[in-house]
Length: 132
Length: 132
Image (cartoon, rainbow over all chains, first blue to last red; front, side, top):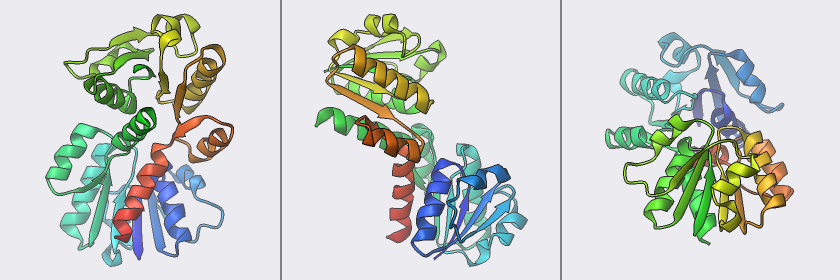
């Protein structure tokens, strides 16, 4: 798969490393070049500096031929906006948006975005340990 | 269960709301009183302003009679330090530490802390969606 990942923070870089290792073709976009230090030494993908709502940056990162786009910046709103740009402008089959705020996550999921909320996952994981 | 939750950020408040609703007795500690606004309106637990490594604050929050302690501040190091204080000084049966950094999470898990890493959960959840 060709995968464009926006945001090379903790979740983005972990995902990029996992999917690169699994043999996929990865492009990572971040507005801060320092963030790319989180990528593992053997990372074979490409990195691009810029904003995820910038169509030129998205095109350079190969969005037009991407099978998937994952928005994983630290900002929920930036992830939502970038996902909407990618869904509206480009024909990417899978668009996944990381949203930290559980309330916003529910709203956007109901609006049709495919969302992942690590906050709820973390809280539920702790609950499971507490109740076991 | 009597549960002391340190940190009323996104994960801590979500956990506090879930466990309060499930009928447990919850004390939440945060150094910033604004954070308690994240608790739901009907929250029946108690809130305490202070640091999680402060034994007086922990005692006021009922740590001596707690069945569980969950460290969920935004700072991995603060969570680790508070968990170690609670494990060393008080006889709390369950101590769970939220760690965002996957590398640190692995080290501390190997050292015997019960850890939860929402970063890895988020990345794995995205991977599952990508590969389905």
